[in-house]
Image 1 (cartoon, rainbow, N blue to C red):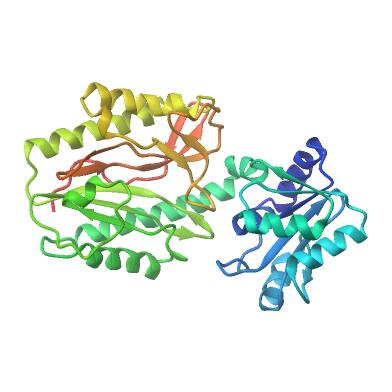
Image 2: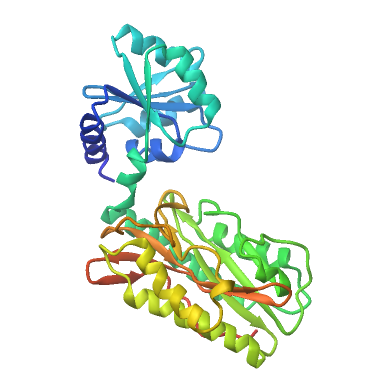
Length: 362
């Protein structure tokens, strides 16, 4: 990963906004800026400080060895805190004459309040500074996402041979997640969705102990994480024999998915890509049954910029990795979502998800 280039780009962004120093505290943004591997987990206490001349990574004793190994040969200096993380950082900033500090707009309010009180000087909240940089993926990032997507494809192929009527949703989720972990996933990209029958009509149903019956949709939304990068894919299969109504719903969603993939390209507004699928589903009589956005960016986080939705006015940039995931949800009956992961390029998009999309009956 091009950690020196990322740091230089962030410094240019900071200078353009007349920032003296930036304090980054969200783990996903710290990982992006530093490029450190084997350091970050959900419980890490850490922060990154960037000025025109300084690139420091602060953490505590628990992560000291891993951080020092990861920082070798990079522009990053590792500081091990002895006391309170933000108290120490703010004390150093005051000693170095820094009067204005920029922090991320996505930090929890309590953290913002504490840092503001400790720093004493002016605290500026910057909007999407690092998230904007993360939108356009480097070649190595796309390759990592591609490896995660390939594992997700293999997991889908595996689970097709496992699904049977009479199983519970949780049985399938455990098998699916276990396959990914046993075959190279560092963990789940997100909490899987295995939703059957009426549960499939809930876009984010999660996993329950409901028993799956013949004659029902089964929606599978899941992803692997490889080298820190996520994949995200949804397939909806039919348990038992599909009726004409099942096929009518499924065919409409598949048509919307394929149309959006065929029509999307770099430079289009996210809302215009969303409209390709939304207008088609509306014409098929399902406009009221597609209530979420068409897609979102995927990278170190499974939900990141850019967004593809009705309110997404900004252009989608070449090199972005996004989902294309139209859906139709009929409460009490069931729902269908078909989601692919794609790289947005100037002439169109390149598919990273390769699992079959025709209606599969198991």
